Image (cartoon, rainbow, N blue to C red; front, side, top):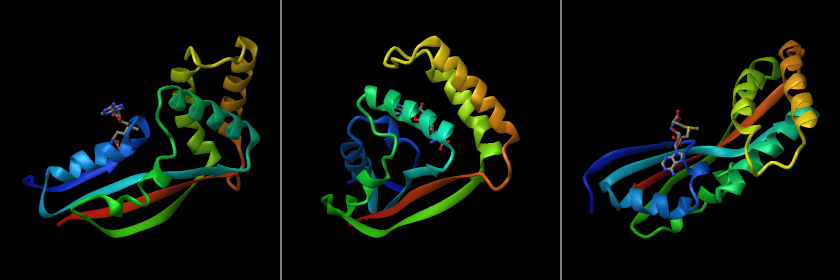
Length: 156
Ligand SMILES: C[S@@+](CC[C@H](N)C(=O)[O-])C[C@H]1O[C@@H](n2cnc3c(N)ncnc32)[C@H](O)[C@@H]1O
């Protein structure tokens, strides 16, 4: 039994090998009636083929570390944890223009392109870097939709 009133978990479980155990540990720090609010990616959806390829690489790099980038589905049933009640579990959508979202993807691609788990050759990675930069000029109608799993747990 802990003493914490509120714990907010945002885009963290995607990095952990055992997200369910991490949440269980966190809930033990909660005071009775304390809440844990979790906001993790359920899916990232886009029609753009290059972005889908990029997201495939990003998923691969995270998976190579034993984690799951789309941690939302893993947290959807956390109400079965002991001493915890599920107050709500829903998916909220954020639609972002590709031309804006790509700025983040460009930064992340710079960080992951040298990852030893990737098998793509240098030319293929260069082509992706070039293609991502070109998407800065994508039409506003081209979108990336983040579907975020938002879960609220309360300690009993
Ligand atoms: C996508 S960032 C989100 C940061 C912040 N929660 C937010 O929403 O802005 C993921 C965070 O997880 C942290 N992280 C990665 N692996 C971790 C681990 N094994 N244990 C704890 N934190 C970790 C990273 O340092 C990073 O701060």
